[in-house]
Length: 474
Image (cartoon, rainbow, N blue to C red; front, side, top):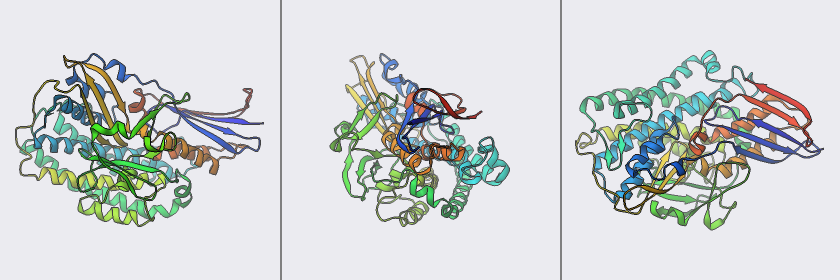
């Protein structure tokens, strides 16, 4: 008799989701679905708002990565205004975005994913969390908290608040950087880099313990997409899109943000509220691609900062062509933290970074504006249309997490087929199904615009609703 396993909700991610595993008569998984169970609505209630409000409104989609939405939203409004913002403002936006990516990656690695790797996939879920890490590895936990604190403190120093800082605006930023703030940031960065390098060194030593997970956690051919600069190097703020195939061949390069719709389509399914972006040339669902730290390291020529370039070279030595296992998102995040710290050091040393001219002003001179940047989880697209009065008439947000939707569903199926025995539920095997989702660090609060608490309730039921087995986590 066929059966269904329901993991509802998925834990240690940001937002609400559940997973359905459908088994055949022998108890083998033959179908897996990743459901995002929240209803998004920002696109509709943005309609009618004056366009300058859009960065601050859309930033409210998430308390974890509001800076990412400030960046993409401000860039979309710059395009609506048809202006070029001051160069200093560009670098200050880049500075805050680097701090945002570093602190968000620290949250993902130390708080959400390290409990599995340090405490064990089969460990007691009551202690398989950051508090368990504090008990077993207090120095590592302290480093994670400190690294995130430094990133958040840089955001607060620039914008006046750690969350939803109204500093990034259409046309630039609200306030220039002072010498005192620059010196304070300069004082924090060496400590941040020391922590990042110590953690990366430890992680590389741990990798040999996860060969089975590396082989089975979302390890399949796909396309990869991310921003690169004019030299083809890693770019988080103001590059153009590059898409490479499973062999590393560049199939599209230097795609301007205004042309993204020629290449990226969006599909919908009836089992989830999150959309399914795909590469149009290969159709749906064949045009599956991945974004985020793993994809960015796969599409760039090099990182562009000294230590990050060394680490990227070692990272790429693991496999000929693109690194395909989604388990290596964790490794890629740590390399990007190093890159962001080095990039922040470069920015604060620019001879014009204290220039007081940091904002250009204008009205809605274009009927539409598109802003693309790299959020911690991947490429973020804001697309606005405005009427003759500058009020938003239409809005579309393609969230970083959404780009990975096809890959996450495929990854869930791969892990479930490898680990899950439908004849007897075990907590550890189901945790691995969740863990492949955590590799992508999905921000479902961004993708669907809601948040909440997430206990775990897993039931194994017959097609007729008969309860066969049950696991609860509070």
